[in-house]
Length: 275
Image (cartoon, rainbow, N blue to C red; front, side, top):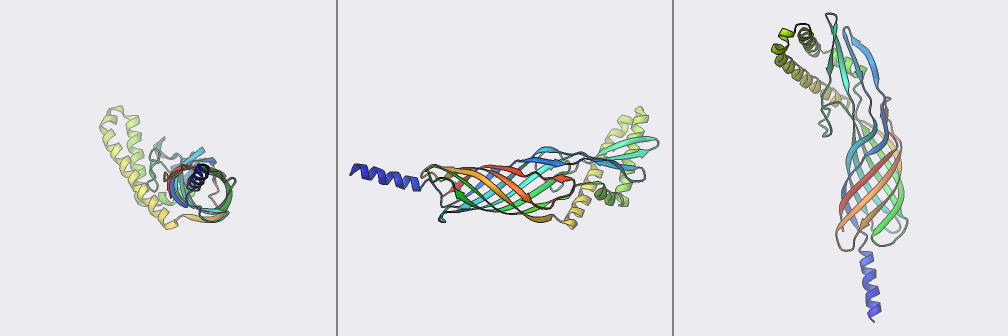
């Protein structure tokens, strides 16, 4: 009798090792991403532009909802957002000298790194997964499904040329370049003009930021459809309503700016509340 009771209790605990439903948050870096740099090129008379690339990891975070109550298969819904930072510069020729103006602006208020342009990539995944084993506590699985991609623009020469055509911005750029040129050629005025120059740069940055965000709002994000395959596992102790999970996803399809190679692999490492 005691043996039967122990076996029944063990079976009950095993069934509670898997959640009926769970919700979690995760860290989600992606691998193999690349933004091709754009070489310095004229935007208009006396003003040139370039941007650097990024390569390696895009940092990001996401949220997941999963349902384990269905027979044979499980279902996951995931939303991820990732960011890749890059440097961009304006070059202004004034009286025989060239002034570099870094475009240190934050696009969309993204929270990572210094204030510089960022390529933002979002994805929404619906996945069907199949458990590889049904052992208690740890639930490894494989699967795949549909992905909806959404991404921002890249601050490139074509985009910037539209900004430079704005008389307000063009006038501010020339004023900043004139101040920097004067400070370089007349050291006696350098300290006196430093505060004014800093104020001009700050105003220019805020003005460009506003114009870029307005233009980005008008363009909106670019959406496309693709898919993914995944391998992962969830771990949950009996009774305790906390689960840990880790996925590796392999993406395909989608439509991205020509300068961007979004990579095909992304990890998801997180914790969740599971019942």
